[in-house]
Length: 362
Image (cartoon, rainbow, N blue to C red; front, side, top):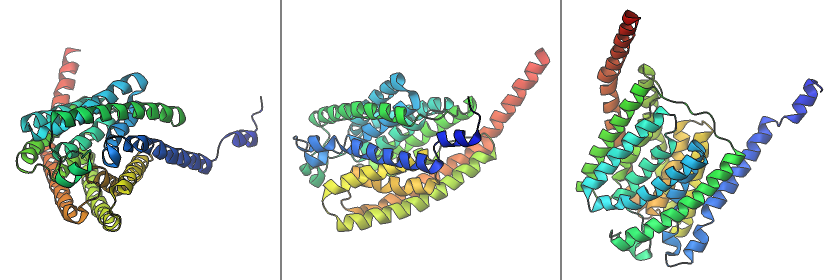
């Protein structure tokens, strides 16, 4: 067997070629995610309702990438059912509040294993669609959604079909672009993270569902989920979240401006839905590639705007989305400061006491 460096270099693909191949595959993935909306638009759902299930597809793709096929299928199913039942929070605010509390705890457990990505994305989508449910018809788009048993039934079927499609795409993605190693978080930090998300998500849901239903106020919940993600136990976590908060504001401002400009020119919801899907997939690709966080938010913002509101009344809701983002940033940083001042020192002292007890007994 030859150990010639030149022959070895020839067998390895150059980084640029690998990047081009990955970009081509991402474009193909975007097309495949959009593909089911074409036949669905020919059904009674029409072009409006056909795009609602994309959220379940995205969660399923990330779930398979994070957990593999077997567990990923269960997470995808859980995501589809959660998204289907989320609009009931408008009728039963206590149920919606409890759902966000439970999702926060699940995120804490998942980040302990380093596999929180699908649950964080699910929490973001639930926060948005619970407060302002996706319309499935043109009439619902124009006059607002009334959450009925028929609406939940149709939405559940759509989400389940979309989750199955997302599972298949996740399997394809896993074959072409294997996921990296999971990066677990320390148990105490994960518990603190889960408790913080449960508290902030639950309180935000209770306030929003009670006093601000059918508005863009769900962006408060979305912002909490994207900022409160710890990866350290000392002051690095403070710096990381402060930087992420700044990136979040910058990306949101630019993203809202872009979404408003596009919606001012394009009034048809169908191309806006397609643009939303493309923006969302590009955002996920930037996140996976480790690009600066503001770039991820820059594409995430118009993606969520177009998929949840179809870009309609973008001028009216743009300012409210920005205000809700700032509120979410503020309460997240307040919670972070309390954690830095009280929780982290308590965790460190507890570990020191445990180490001292272990040394004494040994």
